[in-house]
Image (cartoon, rainbow, N blue to C red; front, side, top):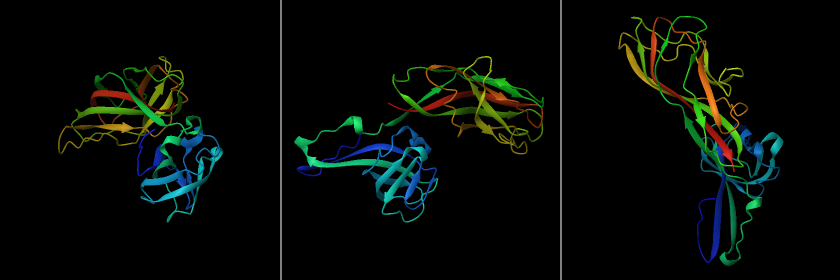
Length: 261
């Protein structure tokens, strides 16, 4: 619960209950798959406020919510169709005598929170032209998640401090690859967490033999593999470079876990 605001002898209380980013929509609907944890009609008579992207600054009354399609319906319609740039907050408004206000928390949507967990650094990984090479990273321990939460989304993060070429020529990742994550230290059930495109981490030796690294946040939801407090394992899967060698310095990876309480 947040944003308690007093405006007069009658109190206007608004609770920023849920925030998110649309997957798609129309002028009268907003679709967000992260809302699948809420029941039908959970947001009826609340206010949908667009805070960024298409229709920024517009607010509309929510008239319906359908869980199976993750769809909010509003009235009147927005100026333009909602799209995947539209970021929003859902607010619940109450106006009443302050002495008579009672908030029924059982009826309120649950607030979405997240926690980040990181592995230790691996100080040096050397990529070569050897096809099929895998590079395991330090494990990531997830601990301290609150009891009774519902995990709604998990994404992986990858940090590289420095990328150094020792081949003497322009260098980069050769072919599409990925960071994969597993709850099994024998890597028996790997899932793709971060897609790494061809020609990533390129070094132009006409300018320098090394460059600053990168921080990547995956867009693959891996909550089917990361289900709670435990130790998780990751590796760069079947990763090769254009020339021998491409060195990655101070690499770490992490998990961002979104949940409701």
